[in-house]
Structure formats: structure tokens, C-alpha cells
Figure 1 (cartoon, rainbow, N blue to C red):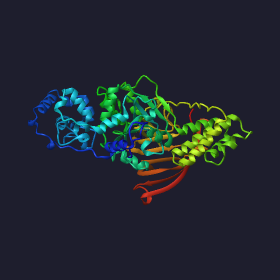
Figure 2 (figure 1 turned 180 degrees about the vertical axis):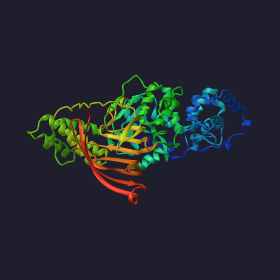
Figure 3 (figure 1 turned 60 degrees about the vertical axis):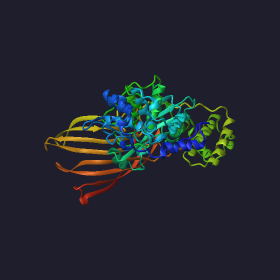
Figure 4 (figure 1 turned 90 degrees about the horizontal axis):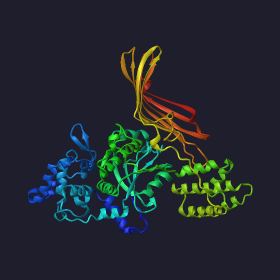
Length: 583
């Protein structure tokens, strides 16, 4: 995971930004031991604070539980969802909110640490809350500078917060369901100078099945980062071709500041990432709960959580401002929009201009091409050149030279067109991710009943509103049958992962479509004789768009493994073709 800061205009020197980067995300977070504290008997004031906190049972207050990410546990009463020991001052802190509060209060009076390593600075959200609740006297607590935190607040200048939802990216296993992050806005008019709070798993796996297994069973560590929002726009909008949705929250300035204080406490702290539980979406809700303890958006979540559930949970907890969601189309969407407005025969001209095969001045001098087609072609060429530069496929000097030549030619044709991009339905308007079904059937005269459960998320036959047309992904799709002749319940099938990524292979964007399916299946190979096989199938394909639809073809090799197969395995291959069109 790479974390970085950029310099908003005139805020800090390069040296200051380097120092801030090191303080925030390079230096390890210190761990603390109660053995290093003054003995409680030596500090009557501290003993009084601890007694008051215990007497009022502040350790059960919702604000304290939210700051430590405690949630009810069937075994231990309360358990923090943070797994990193450095987040706790008590050795029992993960499961004991009372002991963690006592050790936290002791930590505030330590004299062997200073600056950002001191608990008063390291856990500043805890300190500010306990100071208010217990009326802690500033003069009796060691005074610390908290330089790193102050520099963070100077850079971020938190005033308001926006939930950001980048839609799914089907060519990245880590982003297939979409993602959520928070944007912290300041008084700057440009949102590009805002900062983003992000939680993500630390992973380099690109194989969908490997990622699914590790993600489901918690083999990844997840970390919070705070970084320039511009970097996330570049990553999602420009590099990964993902549309983005922005939902402004109704948090006060004080609540936003409390949220930033809490994110500071989470720096370099990990929790185990679970694909359907403690994922990016769920952990962001915990940050919002710490900022506004009276609200509990996690109470509105189903047993398994995906990013669209977060969008709905925040709405149910009444955290949204009274403003419509803002749609930010990706660079690929802009390219597609302009491309569709053009006469098809001139699209190759735009491509040739963007890659330097055709001079833009010579193109506008062609009297056989209409003015509108010339303007569309140059606008499209400029957009595609910017896209290639963002993808680092064009060197900067060549990019600037070509781009300026395009702008010069385009200025001859009059003002740039304001291309209207049709706004799709927002993610919160789509269908729910889970599906349960029950039914009955007859096969070769034998009756059966079945139950099917799909925890997540979307398949090609589901309504496309709020989802990406041509993209589908399902996890843990399970079918159980009761067969009457056999008088027993059997697992008919368990699909670990099934993915379809069907994308239009156009003039400018040339994605390879693909599909993948892996899981367990009960196969019949004789009258009332069955075998269980483990299989994986899928492969590459191509798709071409037509008016409102996609025609596609796939080559699909497959592998089956099972004791009922000859030699214990079977290899095969096939092909499939189809048409996908919304009706």
C-alpha cells in the first residue's frame, strides 16, 4: 500500500511535507506498557479521574466504544474490531473497555514520552473526549506539542465530509463490488485540494480465486490512510475507468474534526480484512460512528456487507445532507459519449490524431469533412491523449507538444462543445445484493425441493439499474436439495466465485472480455448415482456493442477434479456466444 501527500498551493514547504509523510505513515506507532507509568498512588488526581470514570461507567459510553471500535461479542461481551496491539494501551484492551480506559488515563500522565509519541498526542480523540467528560485540568497533565497532528490539521483544514462511491472495476479482484471512501472538504473552492480517508486491504494478488479465498477468511491486513483526493480521482476516474458518485453528509465542523482526530489515531494500525464483513465499507462506518457516537449506521447492515450496503446504511441513519448525489463520469465515459456523437467513418481520424499519425492542422483543412465532425474528432483526440498520458503510455514532452497542437487546431472551430453525459441511476437505486429462492422440481420422475442463497451480488439477468451493464459477479452462490427418492439433503452446488466482464471492444477502448467460475458441483453420472467435483472454468472473449446491447463470444477451457472421475480429473474446452440487451 503506497501512501502519499501532495502540496496544495502555498500550504507547506517540500521539507514540511516530507516530515509530515514520515510522521504519519512511515514511523511505526509506539506501543505502551503500564509498567512505564507512574504508580497510581503517587498521583491522587489521576486516581480521582479513574474513580470518577469507573463510577460513571464511562467505559460503556457509546462514544468510548465507538472510539475503540468495540462491538458486542457472544464470548467476551465486548471486542474491538482492531487487531493491532499497538492500538491499545492495556494488554487486555481488545476485550476490556474498562481496563483500556484506565490505562489510557494513566498514559496521559506519562513523563517518559514526548511529542507525537505521547498518548495525549497519539490518541488525541480519546484525550479530547475524556477531557470533556471528566473535566481534566490542562495544567495537571504533561503539556505536549503534538506537532505532527497540528501539521495534518493545517493541511486538511476539515470543515465537511462527503461519502465517495467509485463503481466496480471488473478487472481488479479487489474492486469488483465497488468501493467507498470519505472526502474531507475545507474552505478551498476546488475539491481537488481536499483529502480522502481510505481503508483498504494490503494485497498484491491479482487472481480472482486467490483473492476471494484470502479475503473471505481474513488473510489480509487492512489499513486506513489519508491522502490527497486528487490521487483517488486519478486512480479511479482516469486509470481504472470507474465512474464516481459523491454523497454529502450532514456532519458539523466539530464532528468532522473529531473524525480526523480518530483517523490520526488509526495511522499504521491494522485490522484483519474480511470480504463480507470487516471490509472497506464497514470500517468507514466505524469512523463515522466515532465522529457521531449517537448514530449507528452499522446497525442497518445485513450479516454480510458490500459497498452498496454502506450507501444505504448511511441513508437509513439520516447522515446524508439534503442534497442530490453528484455523478463524476470517468474519462472512458467521456470518450464513449463523444465517440457516439461522431459519424462512425471519422472515428479512426480522431484515433490517428491522438497517436500522432495525422496532423490536426491538415485535418481541419479537409473541406470534405463537416465542421461538427472536425470538432468532435479533435475533442475526442484530446480526451484520448489525456487518457493515454494518465495511463503513462505517453511521455510528458510528447504529450504537451501534441496536446497544444490539438488545442490550436480546435480553437479555429469555435468554442468547445459541452457534451451532455447521460447520468445513470446511482448505486443506491439498484436492487439489493442478496437473493434467496425456494422451489421444487422433477427430474427423471424423481421429485425434489431446493433452497438457493446468493449473499452477493449481481448477475447478468438481474435488472441493470444502479449496476454496470455487462458486468456480473456472485460469491458463495449455494443450492441445497432434498431428494425424495433418496430421502436425504445434499449440497447441489457451491459457487465460490462467478464473474462475467463483458465490455465493448471499440475504436478507443479495447478491453478483453472474460469470465470465470469456480466451485463445487454435484454431478449425475448414472441413474440416481452422483459424484462431487471441484471445477474451474472460464476464459477470454470479445464483445461488440450495438444499439443498447452487447454481442459476445468466449473461449472457455475447464478443469474438473474429483474421486468419481477417471484419473481423478478431467480437462475440456468449449465456446459460448450470446447477446445481452436490456428490455
